[in-house]
Image (cartoon, rainbow, N blue to C red):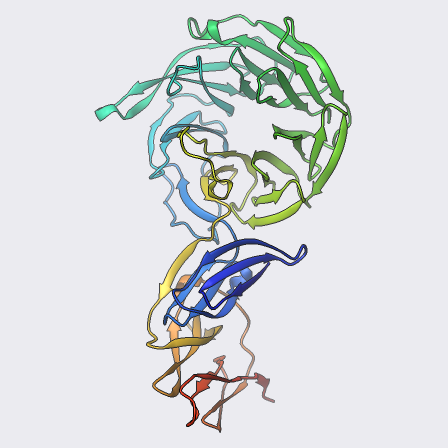
Length: 503
């Protein structure tokens, strides 16, 4: 990534490999005078003529909320995460209005409020891994889903009903019953206006009638879809609801025509990937699949051809799509955003320290409001036990450092060490009343470790045509300055110091 500042105070984020601008934000109310990356690129420090130093995320990706168990200490949103928690892995997420349900490894289901990230309810005595969740819409007139369906490692489907709390708030969930006929773990759920589809590790997909589910949670299957030679891992209905896309451990994509009864297999794409298919999604123009082979593949289903692919160095575990953007989580814990039309990576967020199992979009509940892809919000569920809520196409503002009373014209993060600890300081320079001045501002918030301190360093700077020098054995300094000439009232760039090793 490359960042550039302008006289208007705007900062632009560029993809160097493709020479394209992938994002921009207003950093200052005056000109952006200087930019520097800190903490190995995790953060960006900007200096402006508005006398401000501002600390931002080093690229696109703004952390909104962290959903964690009460036993775990809540962390403030920050780009650099702490060590993983000891809680059970978060495996899946399902959103309903202002609340989200999270399924855990061996620890059932929990409910959280989206705004605060607080837990409001947890299932009791359910020592089952919840591998998939879906809020089910039973009819078009329903304003908010009342039923939640979960699929577990115990091969059972559970139906949960919303319970009201105080002042109309959601109080929790009540389990209505369990059902299921598949002999393997339930790995994926999807619905259209007629069917609930469930994918299992026993190679089968089962269709259940929503009309029957609304009356009795102990329902019988409507149809079996058999065709995969490995566990069926993902499902997605087409936007018109007439086709069902499935992917599996057999590396195959299959398209089922569910507009007829019984449903039939209409297209099979064997060997679509070199490893398990982990997720699939429809776009207006194509279908996208992700895999443990580290590839996103874009497909023309009508022609049965792969249009293009996007490759990454680690397994891609989940994918979702909005507009021209495709979002994927990976086994390294990173969240990626690409434009699928140009295969350009827009951002790479270090969202978690461990594997991301699931990523999904926060749905738009206001039908009268046009969806802006740049404002999309993404959930990520990880092995570290947390669920994170992200604005991947926005930059995060961490803090503003005050102290200068003139335009700041230069910045550098330096490591100052003593026998007790190691901390980061920022050496800055500004022009004030005709004098070049330096100020040292603590920036402990950055938690940066930029470089080891050499044994001895020499620094030089020029102020009013005079050279000053000094050296020290434990401190790194940068001296930058601006001065005013007798004939001009405008600050003039003078000299950025060179650092030399003293022997």
